[in-house]
Length: 263
Image (cartoon, rainbow, N blue to C red; front, side, top):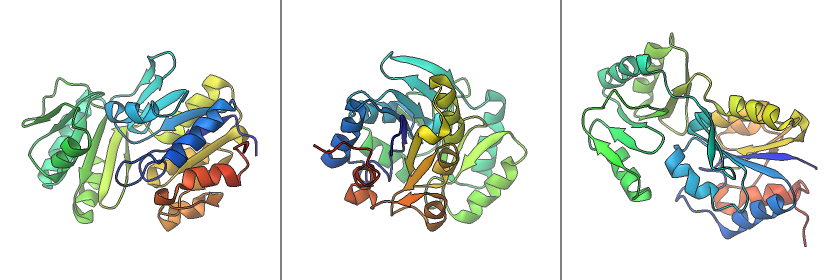
């Protein structure tokens, strides 16, 4: 198949659960870029955490971080669009999360804040040692792009119910997690923008992902691929199911679809 644009998720898709990008996946993506295909990394990761991964691909063109809240032209090194959470909603969102005693992290473009120490903070310090992390009262004068909440499903459901009247995107990102962003910050809107920006038709787009927040991206693509570790309902929405993220599923899909010109 011939695709002009590949929309690529990171966590649980191109990189594994240990945040490792295999040589096989990296080389496969690099090869399709060298063959003239545009690659856009479209991820739930915050900008500062996602950019180093995007730089591991030689010639990746665009980065859409925090599910499309930050839109960045990698080659030109400039922001194209910014969709922060409206500041007038931040107090209401945090009040709901704290009322239900759920754990959360809140992100600017380049830093993370948390109200208290927890395993959510520990994991960021471990995985992203260079990322600025602040723990304590959340400053309301910052520009925030995503709020990550992790707790039991009853608490998450109560938070979603509290926030349902606000124009926000709320997506499960993994088991017992939700991600809260600007209403226009979702992967489908991101891909729609990029298609228009590049004047690329939907049928010329391949999307590869693994979770709920990738479904809007699938809907905006001509062909969609889910990795084998994706939930069943995500696999059912995809045109193809490839191997597990731990088994270089991205490289396998690119080869099976004939996207790679094999040497």
